[in-house]
Length: 64
Image (cartoon, rainbow, N blue to C red; front, side, top):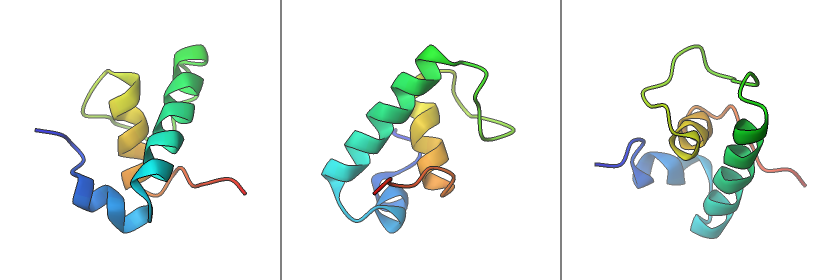
């Protein structure tokens, strides 16, 4: 099962496409800079899942 759930993520981001773009950019950043973690504790070690956890917690927002 995906954590965080898509319903939880959709509360913070309006579009699924925007969600995918945000998660991909954040995951690439985490891959390049593994020490730039935002949350104190993560449920997984994978960069994409960590990016989604940060988005679910409203720690990562869209840049305009």
